Length: 107
Image (spheres, rainbow, N blue to C red):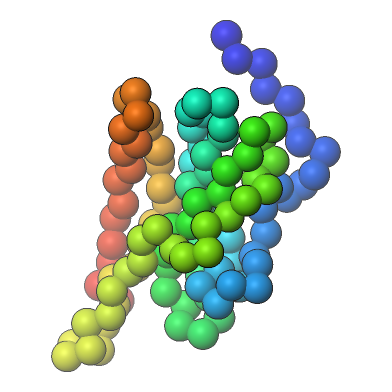
């Protein structure tokens, strides 16, 4: 059984200065692997407001390191003047394989 303790740092992840996540950071999914905690989260930037998935990792549960680039982002479809948005990243692991599903909307 895993014992969870609420972090004193709250929130544990906030928007950064990176343009793809400088507006919102939310809906995290976490998994423990090889002594690290990996946090997959949804983010939006002020410039284009496109949803992206980011990755943060730590050894104690408080994200200390973030990837510089987004792991995944919705794509614009300029011909139809619409875009695909990404939603919450539920996260599962099986050994060294990590799975997530996402839903997109054509807005």
